[in-house]
Length: 315
Ligand SMILES: [Zn+2]
Image 1 (cartoon, rainbow, N blue to C red):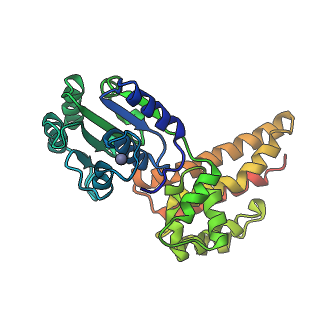
Image 2: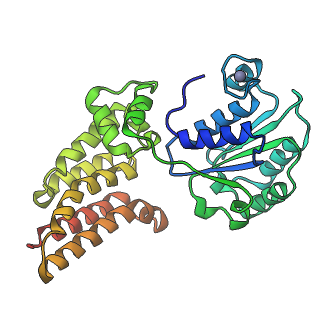
Image 3: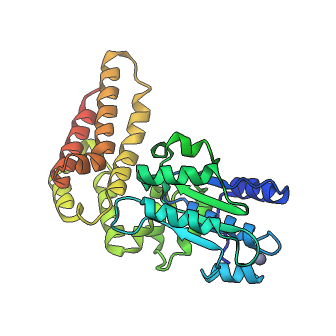
């Protein structure tokens, strides 16, 4: 079994509850995207099913789990291209949990993308949470806690999952199927902010190179070459993930904003406010494009231009 990186606190809390035989029947693992919550859930399922409760990797249960063939473990996630997790899917989960374990022990469900349950699905799950079957364990994985009904949240053991340390991010990135060359690895590390899942797209050399180009275009924000920016956007806005485009913009402007907090007087205040507003515009851009069906390229260029004028205002 490959070693789980990070999430030590979550593992310990779960292992302690297991040892004390006081395991809650529903754990809600929540935290930002791309930090390995799903892998954590797999690991916790391993702890719960392992013959020695240690995810030893060697016993029969661990081997079946690793092969994805354990009859008492069921995984459910959003089907690609679908909008929601449906009530039918949740009923499958509850039926599975109501049966007794084929191997004579627990039954575990890993429910991923829980924030995508529609209202009916969440209601069905709520019933299951209120009347848990004996020996059932539900591991719920969620990237957006606010989107889960409070009634569901309140019936689970909440476990926050935090971003990984840089050393762990590096380790995860080094284990990628397509290894990153050094400068792409450095860029990925800078962009990840603790979430290796957010930068796995840099395995595509074209995306990594485009992002390096973007970073260098933004290296002097107040003297930015608008023609080059426009042509970069035209070429890459369809292929490079928008959250990474924005991340580099924020990283480029952040030091200027930090410096400008030192200035005093009304002019400095106005400038700071302008930069902050422009930056918020950039950060909203990916969502605004979706929400208002904007054309991504022109909308991004407008954001960059606004940022440039805000930066040019003399403090
Ligand atoms: Zn084992």
